[in-house]
Image (tube, rainbow, N blue to C red; front, side, top):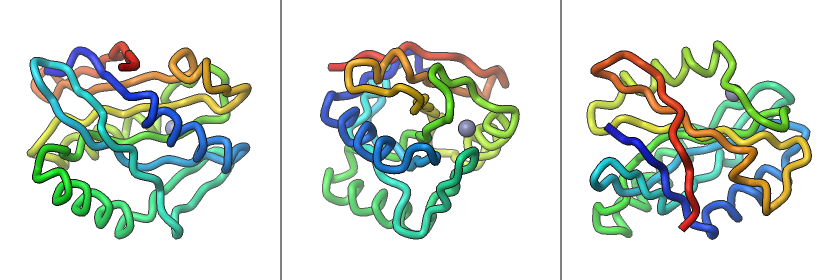
Length: 156
Ligand SMILES: [Zn+2]
């Protein structure tokens, strides 16, 4: 069970830059980190890749690119940074997952035996560096309970 997400300012900056670059289109990618005592600490935000599909209300990652980046980070961190979930941006100020998002979170979460992934969404409308956390949400599927939870995000 994960009950809290910790993210570094450095990771938030990486996300902010990518979201600003592509808005008003969505962008996204994968998250890597460490889970300890129910806290997921995000250590690396992977971008969507050169062949990602970025549209106003649609994002699809360049999967071979993302997989390669995940393997690279896993190797470079000597197995400490593991796949931890996905992130994407939304054409909203305060994002809410769409029914399709929940469907895809469910499919992705059940496709991973190694972890319970966390899904971050950031609203790109009016997004600024200081409002990143206010405009972000973390959704988590507890696979045992078959229930979605919204987790608090803190910067550290
Ligand atoms: Zn979405």
